[in-house]
Image (cartoon, rainbow, N blue to C red; front, side, top):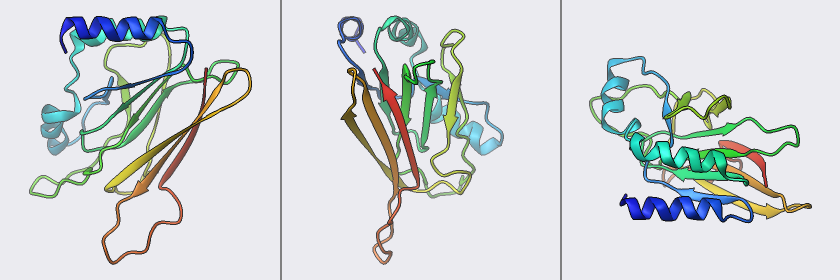
Length: 185
């Protein structure tokens, strides 16, 4: 993005009076090391496209933010929920939600998914927990819903649900594929 736009995002982060949601075109966290030749090829195309130069400044602003920050992103052909482990009050300071409806790209390359992650730039000493919405099953085409509700003491509950995209001849899914809840402040 233009430097002026990055400055606006940084100003927005410092002026938050509650949790914030930031939508990015690429993940802030990158995938873990790839295992197969196919994964390595895909990784070069879109799993690690983060602009690390700008992300260094963005990371500092997120770490300095006095409120929780949620990053929503997609278009990387995989799904993942990652978060900084909650503090002693149960507050999640940083979370990233990835949904890519076309996670299964048909063609010659096929391949496996790797939902582990590490910070594109380290989030200092803050450990990141990575969760696979498919719970080890084969990745599926999906969509995600994100629900926010208010709690006491200016806290916010965020509920993330991953839903399968079904063929026209399948019944609707009664349960989401993955269901995650976080407390933000």
